[in-house]
Image (cartoon, rainbow, N blue to C red; front, side):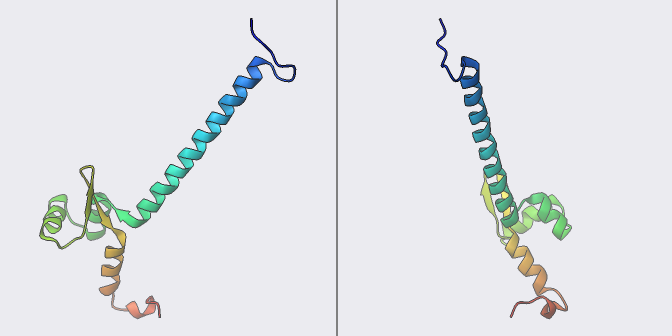
Amino acid sequence: MIKEDVNTGPSETSASNVRQKKKATKMKKKEKKKSRKINKDMWLDNVDVMEILKISESTLARRRKSGLIPYSELGGKFYYPREFFEKSMVAKMKNKHLIEKK
């Protein structure tokens, strides 16, 4: 025999629990996306660096091995600090005085 509350039936209570769980799951997904965005803003992967420098994967590996490019390895994947490339590109600009902060 199913016990029913006077105010809510059994289906309403379980539906409420399902809605709460879905809401919590959505919030967790949003937090993960936010953290990925932060990481993406700070770090570049192989494809990003190869596009910026217009080099092949083997050239990138050689430069990484020789220590010309700083990197971190996580789970077999390489990540490069975005700040390094931004500073390098600014240093090579002819009119960098226009964007430098004082």
